[in-house]
Length: 311
Image (cartoon, rainbow, N blue to C red; front, side, top):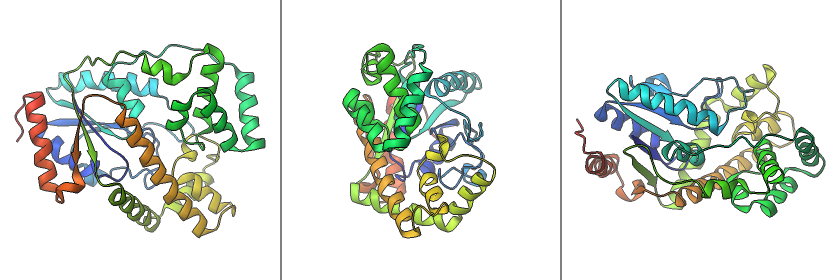
């Protein structure tokens, strides 16, 4: 199995298509937001034209009000890996959601910890009264590693992480650290990176493009369909900020500045998560300076690791 990870805007999509063509691969999206239909611009979702005929899985499989989870991603990915392999093709996971991808690479075991509805409602109410940052601070104190991974805006997952500590007495991050990092697959894991300032510049350019493509109109259409701002999908980067703009809670300049800042911070958290993963072979795609050089570096890593011929 081939896996390509990296922070947002680093250039995974274009490289993944060229690699998939050369390797006779099918791509499994390792992105927790691209599962949602109607959320295309803000998630930088690959278009049918950009796919160039390469099959893509786990894109556009749910409506935005669906509570997608890492356990479901893992289950679906494992099924797809077997099906793709049975077709004589290479399973190829591409994305930036570290926990989701790691759960598949190393076959994490997710125990059923149950739920405490009263506790959840208490925390949701706390966030409404005192703000999302105050709720996130509770997680910083109870489970700092999970707090580092989760954005304060992601109230549902922050509440779930607090609930796990409440029910089990063990932080979710501790449970993840106890997982055996042994892969059931012959695994080639490649990470893309570049100079931090170069990445930040690319992030800002991408957001400018998204706004020109109609991000505001996309968010307005979702709101018109009845998707509430509190839903997990609507808390995603680009969506939350534009909701606040459309509800006149932020000016245009404030919304765009906040979106760019939060996306830079998200990329930083992604890189922080990846640094804790093992087996990643890093390729600096900024240092190479051109696409062909980066592609050839990755080509050599895959050929050496998986012992397969690339066209």
